[in-house]
Image (cartoon, rainbow, N blue to C red; front, top):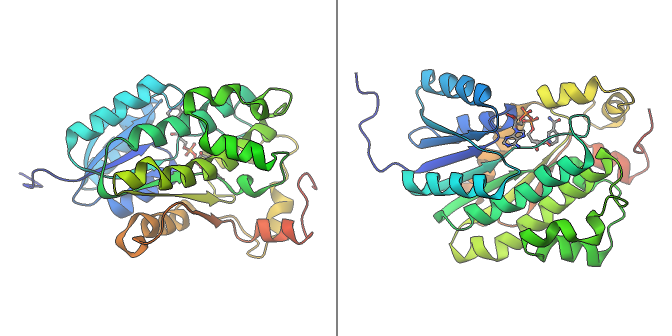
Length: 284
Ligand SMILES: NC(=O)c1ccc[n+]([C@@H]2O[C@H](COP(=O)([O-])OP(=O)(O)OC[C@H]3O[C@@H](n4cnc5c(N)ncnc54)[C@H](O)[C@@H]3O)[C@@H](O)[C@H]2O)c1
């Protein structure tokens, strides 16, 4: 039985084969070749099995999204498979899962390397989606100069920026806020730079509390403030990976052909509550 006789298919790439990433891919990858990357071989095998039995055409590669060479090898593999139409980046760790140093390495610098590497292989008309976080809208100590440096500094030099010094990001929470804000800034710079030169678009999404294994780690972490955040938000509930996937599919698809370099906040109204004094970070 040959399920699919098409050759030279377009490629959809996912780095971070977790809940939100796989939900997005399911919406956009029918008839395409999927390349999955993750640090966990077990996660890759599970997701690859689910996709294959769901009628998708899948390959996988173990990738460490903290490591430039590993990310570059992944981009080379993607380009060898056909025209790379979609790049989705959801590899990340939350504050309760990792140290400040690891969060900066993975959520900020690793993400910047991935934006660079895929900026060299995207097909004309292709689109990228970086999953950031509502946290990128929360209060931080970055100055305008810091933000410009986070946007425009070559990725290999980011770690040396004064605003990423350990004294400025002493907690995993502080490192996460800066990293997710930096995602917005790197996306904007890439949209106007390397991605524009290839005729490809790139945007980010900033989810609020979305129930995934990562969110469960946050719920179970002592001192978490999620309940208060939910109770003070307009929508008064958590979100789902499917709701993120619907917005992701829109931003990746042709209806968003005039949208590039933006971040879409999907948070059920948490940031609106913060900005109007109905909720303050840390309040339980
Ligand atoms: N769930 C939420 O409430 C929420 C809210 C806002 C933002 N986010 C962000 O969304 C992204 C995806 O989160 P999710 O909730 O789908 O989580 P998830 O845990 O389901 O998926 C994350 C995936 O990243 C992979 N990963 C971790 N470290 C890696 C590495 N070094 N190299 C390659 N892969 C690695 C994990 O193995 C996992 O498969 C993360 O960046 C997270 O910070 C999540």
